Image (cartoon, rainbow, N blue to C red; front, side, top):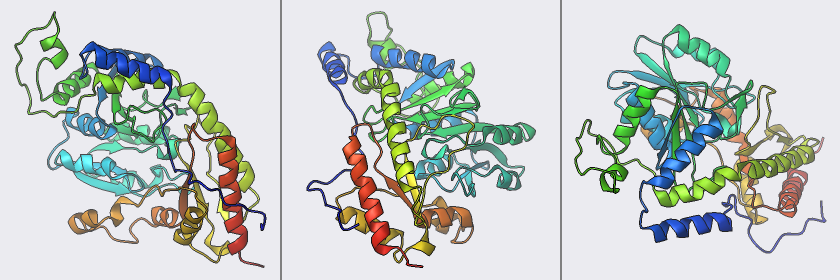
Length: 393
């Protein structure tokens, strides 16, 4: 343990991997004169449909926009209830509120951090209209059980797949199971367009409603109006939103999608390196991986075993940062945030599994731009801290 040597530079928690092809495509778009939603956005949508195996893909400015439009397009509104996981980013729940509905939270599986189907059905009331499963860290939820419950109660399923591009479940791509699925292309995600997302569905009518709502509720989008084959005339069919992706963003996405396989192989390699290195440390619990599909490894989340350490999670993070390792925490459970406590009466203790996970988790750096030497450095730093602060038997 005394052999650890601190690196001189800081290793960021996450960085995008942008190559020359992406840069050239963006430059081509800038020179073309068409920089907002246009032909390259349309091309990315078609390419994404082929990749996922879905009928419709709507390119948007965020996964958050996709989650919002999915529920609106399904008719979710005031007086309705929508169930989602408490261990997720705020947008999973915020977008429910934006429709006028009430977010109803459910605890998670202690092994995976995904929505616990065993605790789902007890949350259903006569006001429940939808379920928003969150594929935490890149591992699929137990969709067989969730879809079975949804069908029994005639509920809409809007999957939050912000972490789950490339994830599969029992031979199916995430994006082909629920009624809708929303993906994220944020800067830290498995592919990036800087900001951006994609809403996919096999429901043609729902897709059309989402498209209209994504562009101010207009009957024709800007590409149709301003191209040489378009018409100036449009009608507002719904008081919609400005949620569309731009061709600048799509230019990145076209080549990022081509490189996803390459990116994934590196993520899988680094995840294996971490798990192999930490498997013999009592103070560290490595991610539990179910065998029902491919893990996208958006996150690599360790859990601190408090019984084996003389420091808590927050102190462990400080020690990592002192060793120039950037980390994060995914996530502070929704019910612990002030807004949700104050408005809906949630409190500490309501979801004990999520709270226990939250208290102990650290997301380590995991991205293709890292080198194997970077990964080995993180491993050495974690092992050094666990050795220094481990309880002696």
